[in-house]
Length: 160
View 1: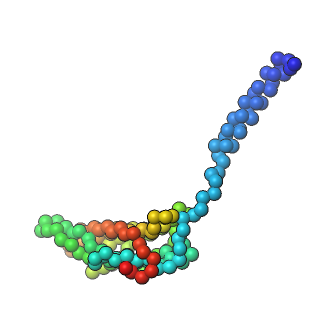
View 2: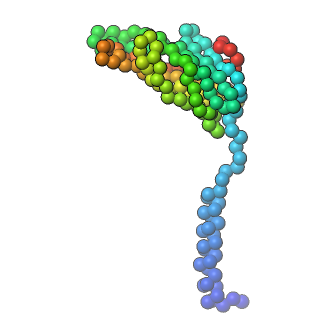
View 3: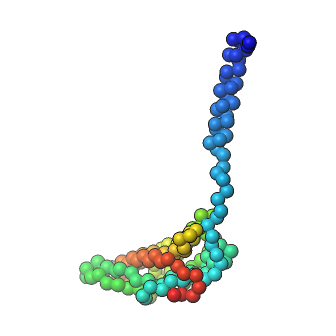
């Protein structure tokens, strides 16, 4: 039978071992999860007069293009109206491990400079989604401000 002095020496060591074991378990990496698929090919979607298209090669998204309607407001006249904005040759970067790609862009369309965010999301089992947002300001010569957003479930192949 161990004596009391020896037992009191072992208790702190046992507590330290338990603490280190719990910390190691908390820091353990999760099991391997497959990356979201990003199959090579062209993707596109047309809905009315709005569309999005892009190309994927080795998870890299290139040739992103779109055409969309924007809601505009002229603060001088108080008038609300619709204008179109198109963008092309947007690309760069790869889809992440979880299947997300995004790119901030600045483009000129119809003498308006607009900026926004182009995004693509690849999902397992639910499809591929593409979205674009744009904001334009009239600058010094115009009191017109516009913004727009489109979001489509994409199809692989030509625009459809």
